[in-house]
Length: 364
Ligand code: OGA
Ligand code: NI
Image (tube, rainbow, N blue to C red; front, top):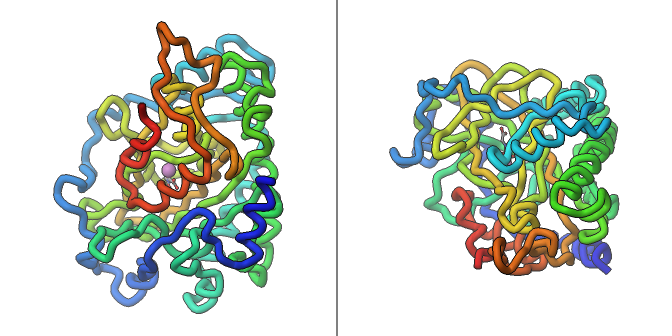
């Protein structure tokens, strides 16, 4: 039933399943004409601008979880994962089993796409009533400030949700790279899901049983260099609407920042690792024990940065709400109402990215 709904809208080419966004110019193309320009529409209000030189909290590091130890059910590592989810909502995983070659190919495929002439990229452009494809999402007003970023969003699982209209099929190796990467990431996400199930008081298959087959979508972010990174944001503060997200980021260039205890911290890249963050759906299911954390990306003057965010999500028709194992009338009263996932994600896509403002509709 759930698949049919997705498929029906894909087949009709409507894509209205999740939402729409106003069309905006490509910042990468604007800069091809004038690499120094910082158009008005991208200059953030003073209160929203990043403090680029703030390095006071350099010593605080996003926790690192060794996936090979989790596989061995190492009690220490499981505790680390639990603490990371509770206190950070973010962790980096090493020894995750995704071969380096697959990550390198994925990054190369993405880079090759963004290096194509605009006319070629435009063949994969999203329509105004679509959220898949090349362009930008979360733009709901002509007055809204824009992020210093072009993106490409593709649904990848279940297979039926793939809409090849938005894939650059003539770009050699692109389809294969995305297929391989998304398959490998699904294996990692299944293991994360099994661990979270246990930590939330169920057996390893608890989340799968409750939520059915997960959806997966990949957002490729291209952040061009900026002559004034102090005035703009690569991606505005937001939390992800997913269960959780796995981010493959540049091995060297800082860009991702997370809001930890009210302070913006750099999530410094560890080569070949994946950054994982808890999304709104796990916050809701865990009745707030694991919170989705605000994050953003900043731009830089030196080198374009690319990142690949893979969102793991429940099916559209699935009801999400606090798990029975996470509610206790006396000590842990329900803090969230139940909602059908598609209703949640639709209202997220109907707003600009603005911290956690979009989570208000599920809070009790
Ligand atoms: C995202 C995201 C951060 C980054 O795509 O949701 O938060 O560093 N990206 O690109
Ligand atoms: Ni995000």
